[in-house]
Length: 141
Image 1 (cartoon, rainbow, N blue to C red):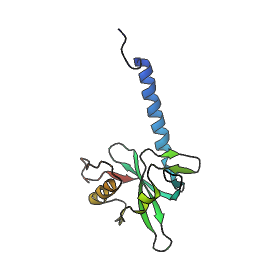
Image 2: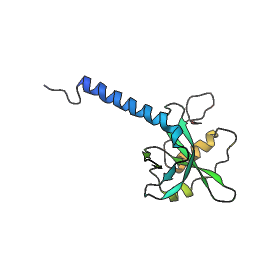
Image 3: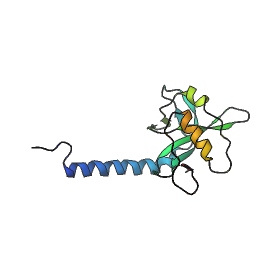
């Protein structure tokens, strides 16, 4: 009787490929800054300012873009499932969702736990506070 799934050697190779791809993405996060963020319909949202990663997984979770000409403020955009292009990053949300995102006041480098929760809920993402001393899930890279 044959077992379902990939043979162990194939499975290990797939796992290694995933890890290498993840490393490439993480190494390139620094190169994302300044690239255009494009919504799920191909419309420009703005230029990526900063990337915030999940403190437990080190995965990129949110990026910030500047909006407005006078009194510009930072708006957070989810990066889960981001598509990488040569000059842009395509996100899985619409420009309208980004425009209606809550205004977050930055106090230093970090978001408050309440602000994190608000962002996750706005984009209908599951939020659970991590078991860390700060109680925050996101860290700026």
